[in-house]
Image (cartoon, rainbow, N blue to C red; front, side):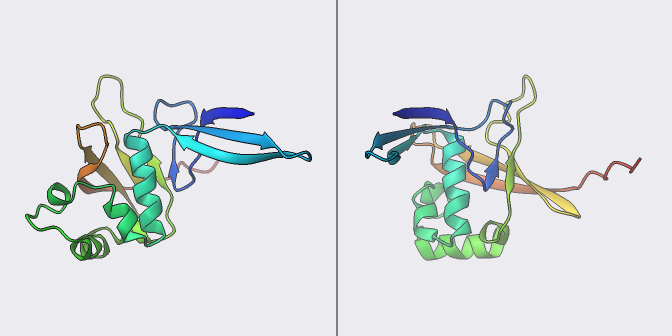
Length: 157
């Protein structure tokens, strides 16, 4: 049995009716009592790279996250290292190391907002603007974070 659908990754939320996200394709076999998963494949793309990057950092797996960047460009260095990457994350984006759920931002019609994602917090919101390699590997070459005020909560009826 093969099941294909829109992946629901958990640490990076996508609007179910939106255009963003990635596809998962799972293969199951019958073992005589029930279906057992044998293989799951995901469609490559910027959103899948973001999900893997956020997930790796959430688990403090710097080596896996490092494999998803173009090191020289991302670190803006002629001699990038895993240790330099680890230090950058810890000093600049410590929120990736916590238990936060990020949200993919749907692009507005006619805007090139590909890959934007946000972290809504009680008193502020971070918006991230990633840039990906154009070689078909979708490696992160840059990541910029801006801070915005959180929108006010709607009044209670």
